[in-house]
Length: 373
Image (cartoon, rainbow, N blue to C red; front, top):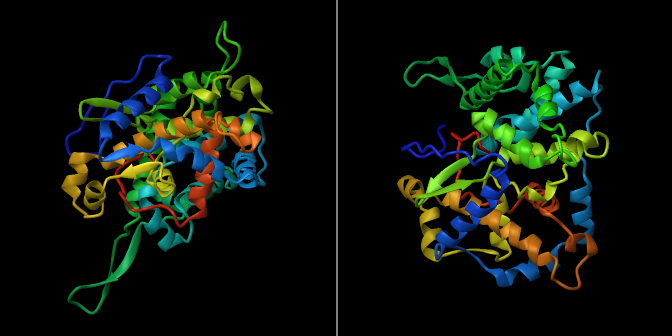
């Protein structure tokens, strides 16, 4: 399992069954401790941030249902399949600027548009369909150009060349192809059957488990194995798998509680992908970056990034900072009751709401190779 975006590929072993989310929390705490003095958490800034949370905005962001779309589904399985495929493809943040410049949509809207195009075209999004999807079909559904015309360097003519977004279309195709293979070989007709199978209540359990579901996703699909190593420490984040679990919970926990009302929803962490959430925490003084580290981060030195892994370190420190925010909120006086009792699922919705407002995210790193976020 390749688990690093550096030149030297690192194989990080998966946690044992039942320990996936505990491994995220403990490894990110350990990474946070090891990242000092370059990157630190200022615990004294936590109460001020918690008091600064606008109660109305917090309620709006945490109560907003994901994928509230005017689409008609023939069955519950078809709807779960649609939502699951959209959430499974939750990556591509490294392409945000190029996607918006070309398509005037952000990357996640392009993904939603693509899966909607499949649905509106009456495509049955089965494992077989996903496994055999071509890049030309992907480009058509998602509206991604594969070629563009450019002027010849010496002759008075234009030539057709691969479009810069072709690589993104190829990643979408490859992820869908691989998922289709895994599902077919596992005996599942589509993604919904996999999801429903791994959100069943186990014998002796009181309800469906987010821990079990995340573990099943990460174990089955290589693209969800968001784990890496720095300074001999194995670090687990599992952003895509956790986002998939969170949004299926948000969408279906009240209407389909036997599968999605996860009794251990509090075990999930805030889903840190690109630099968005670390940027917000840095703006509020929670994540501190030393002047020396910030100079290296903004220098454009590719080798320094590969050696120092500030992308991995900032992501892990941000996860740990969010754990501490939730813990501290229970102690801070004079805050809204909803904020006081928030868990990571609620903080995740709030912080991503702030990211989508724009104007905060810093270009500390851009990773077009990863499919983790």
